[in-house]
Length: 433
Image 1 (tube, rainbow, N blue to C red):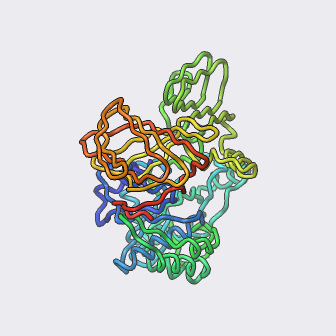
Image 2: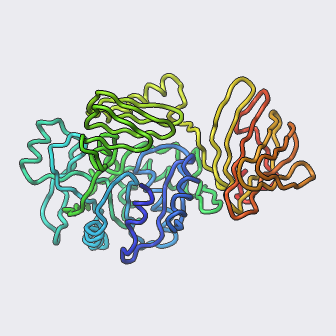
């Protein structure tokens, strides 16, 4: 979906390379996803802590305004489905308002009394499809949502915006000075490596966690809303993903290796194993290699409560995934137990891990596909399929791929401590510590 979001900008007049704001754990995944579709971002800003959209947008605005004080920011969440042609027409309308100093958002004409969206009450017309904002309304109950729909004067709040970078910062400074100050200090103390801008952790974490709506849009007198014509869906839950997916004759949306018998109107995502459904209706079933979710479709938005429960239980399934992306490729955990861990590694063509050593673990590498170039102590050797090597505790080593095809290995770690922080780097082409 982040690829679709970036590709939506192609052909948009005056649009530069995207700036992406992402969590630390997603940085390499984001870079790889954009590279796959031929897009090089202007920057990938790394959030050291989750602080909602107002601080995230502030960081982007500060980075961009240094390069171009007149720049406009088109703010797009990466979990929306949008019709591209109408989207670009709506952006053109919002651009005129933003160039005049307005902070514009995009309102979607309601098709049902939805209770999962915020609403915008439309004020007087400014020009064309652009209106002043009368007020924002938080997610209503069903009775109120029905009244909004019947009035014809309310739009769904899409969560997309277009405004001047400096205009947004000025309004943020006026209405949420603590957020502005925290973002300014986090950017001033940021470090840069490759395409990544790493915000300073302590300063950014000091910011209040507020959405751009709460912090700015509900308070500014410069707000404007475009009555959007675009096809839009905020794919914020599995039930909404079912809504926009292709379905079989029984209304089931299926991904992966799935078989059904007398199942209806269900969403099934099988990521790593076969999933069968028998005699059920209106379910969401999501299988990954580290967790399984089964939910009634009409309660799919309550997944956040499940996540909160996992937090309280100090579980890690929702934050630590089996596949972890790195600039050189990825690794995924296959098995683990007392004093051992088994991983599968993929090294991209022309890439290499850092020259490193471990103080508390040894490693065995077995090449299962391709040719790996291995530095082991003072020696360098090429390992081909079915060949292996052993890296004792404390030995300097490096794994590289000098070929034009990916290399896949199985790594068996053994020792008293197997954490990822047991690593001492001596040389790294990606400038990691």
